Length: 635
Image (cartoon, rainbow, N blue to C red; front, side, top):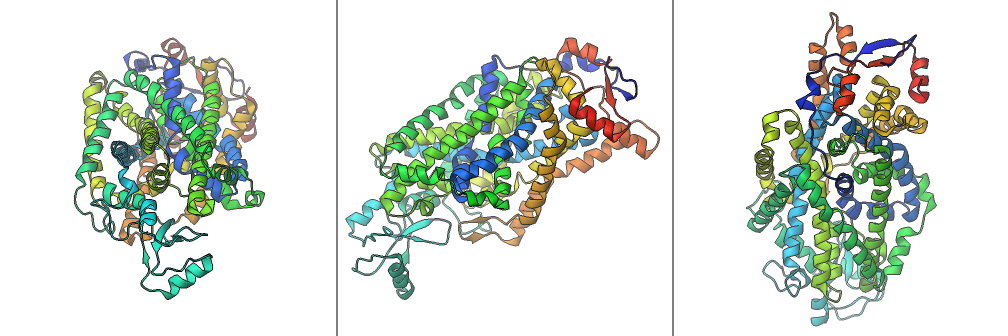
């Protein structure tokens, strides 16, 4: 029992019902399996299609300054907090909030976010499977314009040479098409043009000029997506994508059906293979003509951008994507760790390796982009894209011009598949863990229940297989995670101040054998929540509406997206009201006060420690100064 002379003593409780079977939890077969699962989850497609673009947009190598600062002061403290929370309690995102039941709604919000993400994110795995299948065809189906899906506006590199289309020395038949990328065009003239000004002048005068798509973009738009004109036109079912979706969910099922036993084995492949393929692609990309120019563009710093407030905001947002903090799966995956695992060391290693991967991916991406700029005659900033356009348009275009294009296409899309699968595992498992952690019968029938979750996820994802599916994908991807920084802010407030950084430090000390360093306590209590509050204000005041190319969503779709962003936040006040109602106490104030105290279910997962922990007392201070001093420096 912890004693205090001048502090108020709050008993955690004496109910031992949770110290028996309910505390039994799955654990990773080996430590490396847990580490690889966490690494595979945090290293996802955000590292591939978002980070390099942000570097290019925000000062090249200089962007690493705000990015690293945000990693240290925003992402890492929450990352360590969540790993510690999951490992200490051995519980999922809802049950771990027994430390402060008033905010248990945050756990429900995390589950809702993951439930939504696992429904639409599976499409990345689906599209990857389809591209892998097409990568075995020779020639690559996206490299020519003589296919059933192509239109009269299609043009490929091979077609340009074959048909003796005018080649521009400065632009190589590329122009800006107003859709966030460059596409090719033909001009009804035999004059060889030399400057961009002459091109623009001719295009303005020649009303018969046709703006046309590359063969790679047409393959994506008209074959893979079979895209409709807008979200208002859902269109018909894309059967081939439906079959790939079924295949994607089958893979996910077999990897998750036995919980950590099957996931732990799957990550030996899915978490390590991307690094092998990245290294191969990096070596190959570095040998291409123009690769040096692309890499130099990537790493050359523009320090004037560091003073731009918006750059810091984008860096802060990116760390939530690249480290996956406050989404919930980190808590669930860490709950399968051995209780004595050094989660502080793991946090440092995982964040370091994960962000090193982001930088490494940037070298791969910009070596390829440099090659594309070299072959097209464009500058690097005119070729670079982000999001699905980079993975499913720009990269296929690059590999189609390489020797042995089928080999490079297969390697690249297998890498995309494994990155997508690891993230998908992380979003589905927290949803399953909520039920397996609450009901013994479900836990005993894990395989059947996993099959049910997979089937429901498949049914909910069916609209994404229609011609208008990409518009729903973009809408969900735009709004789904908007409330995640709020979850992080509440985590810092609860474990920094309400439960207390010192109390939580003593809990962590039981696991790793040492208290939490003072610097991390300062981050939990002051720096990180302040930065998160600023970030939330920026998000609310500067959030823009989504677009897809030059298509703008109708008002109804944007309202639906905003509702999607708000739904995960709704459980926070609802659950708070319910917890206040059932809390002990006579008056409203006393009920609120008691709902801020840990329940008798707040205890370590370790059975031996749990028996002693029920007699432990949580200490709070009567003065603000005393609380600040104890939270930072301990007793």
